[in-house]
Length: 286
Image (cartoon, rainbow, N blue to C red; front, side, top):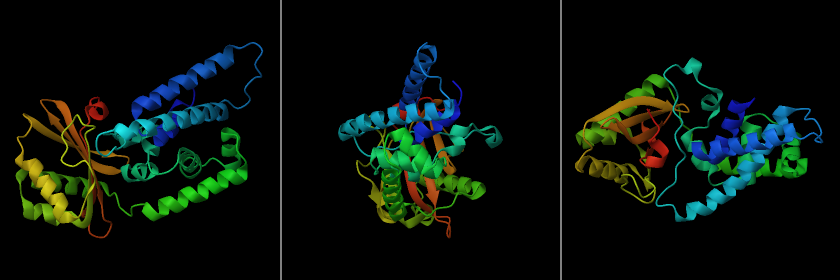
């Protein structure tokens, strides 16, 4: 399907999971194929606009269903991590355009319509008029949704930095301090206002069912993790998720956890940690 990478990126930034994104793309392809084969259908003048409209509306419907299912999700829900490849020049569009983990977490608090308007306009540059046609709403209504979304995001948007060399160094120090039980080094790595999210979905390792705020409390949770029996044949690879440094932890060669961090721009201390151990979200990581 033409424009697949663009469609993947739009839908992923609306839904936050690869499986749901692929499902929406499959439904979009079926809709396109049906339209293309129909002998009495009006020819599509702009396939790109048509495909974006179809996948956007399918994603809105899927998003509403996902929000209902989150009511029974165990603990915090985090987006599925999309890893950057070793060769960033060869990264596909969907990985380059993916929002940071922090931004995706903020977008979770928007309504489906606010989220789609923000993603289409602020991330991908679609005009308000184009979005209005896709959503069958007036341009004025779309502009109002955009204003509400931006206001909400400005109030919660993290101010972080992502310098590759520094990010990897800090991730390495954080993991060494945690796994080595070095409380002093751990406290030095954490910013006073740091927040820890642990997403296990009730199936992976997790230490808190709510976000943990503050350096001392986060350090206590991480030290408790270090005190637990560790997975066997542990190995760690350091990569990036949409510009954020992360540590990929493997046990017996299988994914055990993905730990994404954010850094304060002035101090390079860790301001946020997103730990994902839900097997459904990390099992395909290599």
